[in-house]
Amino acid sequence: MENMNLEEILDDLDSTQNSYQETLNFILNNYAQEEWDDMSEKLIFSEKELNDLIIRKEDLGEKNGLNFLILIYNNEFSEDFLDQEYIKDLLDIPEYEYHEIMGRYNSLECGSTLWGNLFYNNQWVFSENFLLKNIDRIKNIYGFQRYQTVTEKMFQKIIDDIEYINLFDQKLSANFIQKYFKDHHSKFNFRDFNKVIDFTEEQFIEFISYKDILDKKEYDKLWYSVGYFNISEEFIKSNLDKINTIYKVDYSEGNSWKSILNNKINYSNKLIEDNIQNIDISQLFNGKVNLSKKLIEQYYPKNNKEFKDSNFLEIKNISEMNELVKKMISEEIIDFKSLSRGKYVSLELIEKYHNRLDMEYVLHYNNFVTIDFFVNKILEWYPNLKISISTYLNIENANENNLNFILNKPEFYSQFTLSDMYLYFNIIKDIMLSFPDMYSDNIKKSIDEFKHQQPQFFTVKNETKDISSFEDPAFLIKFIFNNLCDRIEN
Image 1: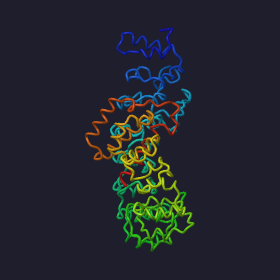
Image 2: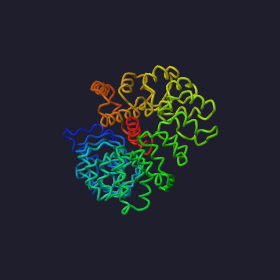
Image 3: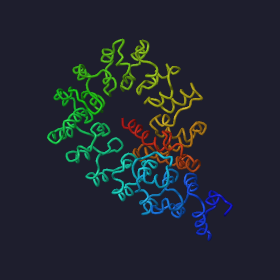
C-alpha cells in the first residue's frame, strides 16, 4: 500500500475483507488532509465507509479523514445516516467555525450551521418525520423554510420560537394563517398573501378588524393586498375610499387595484370603467380580468408607452381577438418580442408570424402550445431547434403527453445534459406528488422502465464548479416547480 495513492486504495476498499481495519488505520495515518479533501469531493462512499472515515467534531483539525462539509455537496445520505448523533453534532457547527478549522471550501456560503448547507444541496427531499425529529436544531436555520417543505404541523410546533413564516416558499392554507394571524401577524409578509390561493373576503374582514393591534404599516399592507382575498365586487364598491388610497408599502407605492386585478375573480368591465381614473393602465393590462374589445380599444392611444410596457397578451380572452392583435401589430403597438411572450396568443397567430417569433419564448410562456403543435408545426419549421429543459416542461404543463414524447424520443432528449434530465425527472416526481390525478398508472410504469434503462438521468453527482451556479439543478428545481404549479392551478 505504501506505493499506492489514496484514490487507488479507496477504490479497492472492501469492508468485508479481513484487512479492512488494517487498511483504515494505514490510510487515516499516512495521507494528508488535502488528499482526503480531494477524495471527499471526487468519490462516492457507502454509509459504512462514511461512518469509518468521516472526521468527528472533536477531531476536526487534529486527525485526517473525509471532510463532512465537502461530502454534503457530493454524496447522497439516507435520513437514518443523518440521524446519527455524531453527524448531527457536525451539522450543528456554524459554517464559519468549520471553515476556520478545516480551511475554506468552494461552497455557497449559507451563513448558518452546516444544516443550511445540507438543506441547500438537498432541496425539498427530507421527510416530515426527519425534520420534526430535529426541529429544535433547525427551526431557525434560513435554509429550513427556504429549501425544505415545512408542514402546518411543523409550524404549529415552532411558531412561538421563529421570527418569520415564509409564505413565498411554503404552501400554507388560509385557515392556518387565520388561526395564527391575531397572535403572530408580525411574522407574516402580507405581500406574499398572493401565494395563498384560498383566502376569503370574510378572512380579510376579520384581519382588518384587528386595527388596534396592527401598526400603521401592517394595516396599510393589508389594504394594499386586499385583492389576494378574492373579494367580491360588492365589497369593492362599498370600500372604494380604502381601495383608492395610495399606500407606501416597502419599496412600492400604489393603491389596491393591482392586487384586485390579479386575483381569480373575473370582475365586470363596468366596475373597471367606473373606476378607471384610479387604475394604472399598465396594471389593467397586466391583470387577469377579461377585458372587452371595446375596453381594450378605448384605452390604448396610438402612442401609449404604458400599454407597450404591459403584459396585455396575458389577458385570457385575447385569444378570441386575433383581428385586434393583428391591427395592433400593424400599428406597432405590439412588437414580436411581446407576441412571443404572450400567454394567451392564439396558435393561429403563432403560425402566421412564426418566422418573426422567438420560439424559446413561445414555448416557455404560451398556454395553448401542445405537444402535437410543437412536433408537427414548430419542429417542422425549425428541425434543429434547441430549447431549455425548463421550457420543455412548460409544454402542456408537464402532463402525460409531455412525458410520453420525451420518454420515447432519444433523438430529442439527447440535446439535454445529464443535469437537465435529472432536473426534469425530479420536477416530474414533485408534480406527481402535488397533482396525483394528472398521471395514469401506465405513465408511472413507463417512467420506472425508463429509469431502469437510463439510470444516469435519475442520480447526478454535482460538480464543485456548479455549487454556486444558477445551473445547479438543486437550485432551480423549486423555482421551476413553483412556476409549473402556478400554470397548472391557473
